[in-house]
Image 1 (spheres, rainbow, N blue to C red):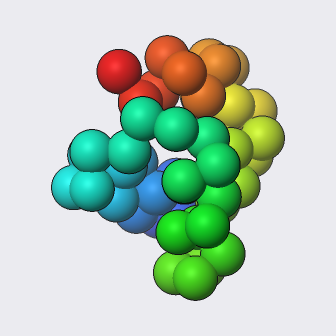
Image 2: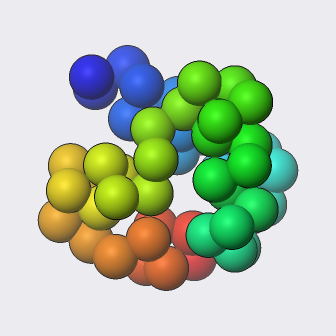
Image 3: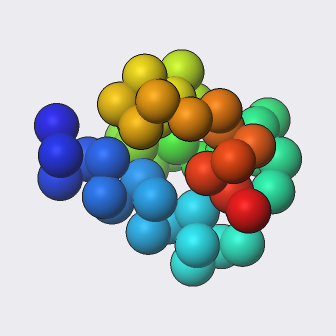
Length: 51
């Protein structure tokens, strides 16, 4: 789970994702964690993760 979490955060940074809907599309295509899962693991809102 930690590997997927780190992979998801790395992809957000690489692609400079700022929008939840944009991330959801990419997450489905690349088998990444969904925003709700990222929020649960990090205890932060998705918007805080993409800053």
